[in-house]
Every structure is written in C-alpha cells, then in structure tokens.
Image (cartoon, rainbow, N blue to C red; front, side, top):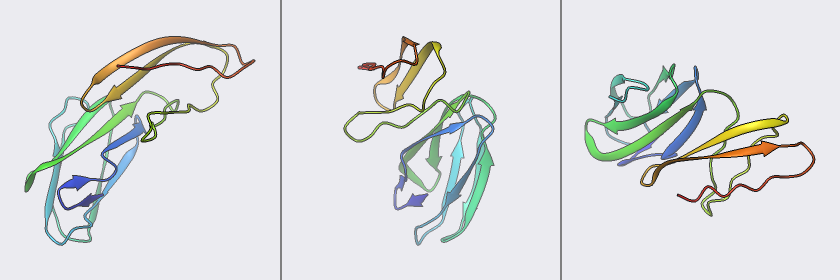
Amino acid sequence: ELEGDRFTPRVLPVMVGSKVRFRNRDRVYHNVFSVSPAGRFELGNLAPGKKRETRFASPGVSNLFCELHPAAAGFVVVCPNWYFTRARASGEYLLPALPRGGYVVHAWHPRLGATRRSVQVTGREAVTLDLSF
C-alpha cells in the first residue's frame, strides 16, 4: 500500500509467482515501478483509492519506487519457496516448521545487504540461528 511518501510494509517477502496488489491510500496519484532485474514493471498512474497488481516471476529483490514521489521506496523480496518469514521490529524471526535436512538461510536487509548461514534441522529441537550482518 502507498500512503504519503512510503510503502507499507516497506519490505514484503513473497514466494516466486505471487501477485502483489498495490493500493493507493493517499489523496494524490502515485506511479509505482521497479527497474530491478528480479521484476521490472510500471503500474502507470494510480488514482487515489485505486489498486493494481503485478506478478513476481523471478527470485530476488525488487526495489519499488514512485515516479511522483522520489523519496518513496519499498522492496519486494521474492523467495524461491514458501520457507520464509519477516523479522519483527526487534530483529527476532521464526521460520515455519522445516523438514529434516540441511539448509542455507538467506537474510536480506534494505541498508545492510545480504547474508547467509548454513543450518542443520534434525526435527528434535528448535534451532537458533544468529543472522547478524
């Protein structure tokens, strides 16, 4: 959603192939677009109260902008599967239950960039994984 000069939420994780609906909750027009390799699109002028959607077909981070409000910035993090989550304001996160096995956990932050860590899930106990950047 767009309101004023910001996207809400600022960072939105979705699974590859998902559609994202952009709703203009402002009193002025907005023009949402992305030139990111993970998902290039332009929604055109979006009138107050109106909505449009686009599908994100490739994994990666799509930086969102508004042509009419250069300070507005948002991000759609397109994940290759449904094993993702969004961190709380405190930085804590909880992934959905994972089948046993080895995983590489990828984390992304708008200012700090990306990091990844390997983890082994045994199915016997909760696993704590520090993703400090």
